[in-house]
Image 1 (cartoon, rainbow, N blue to C red):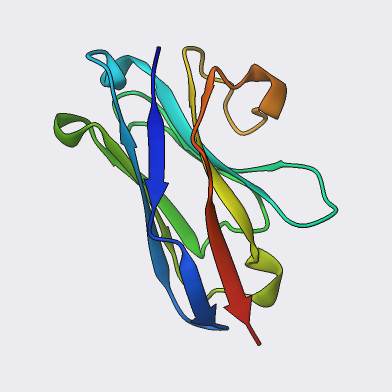
Image 2: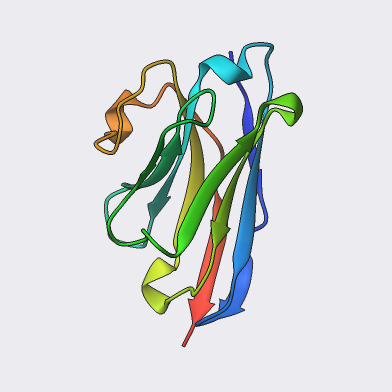
Length: 125
């Protein structure tokens, strides 16, 4: 069992930045593809970004590409999401996710093996 704990969410103004962190348990963190999903009120949970086990492959939803950067530090069992130039439409609960299989940029939520509890990101305009 892998446990994921997100942190770093909060309230920011449009155009601002936030850095989310996801701390993972387990000895095999580097073998997992890690990612971020988000869910706004009344909407489906959607894919945001993912990173392969060794950090060599990065995937982004078109809505965040160029603004968000996913990274990982396997020595710390942590994945990050740097969010810049935030927009009101980025407001959502952000969830850390892990998968044993690399689904690329078409990673459906039903193929997530482990979820974090979520952290709220609110962007005011």
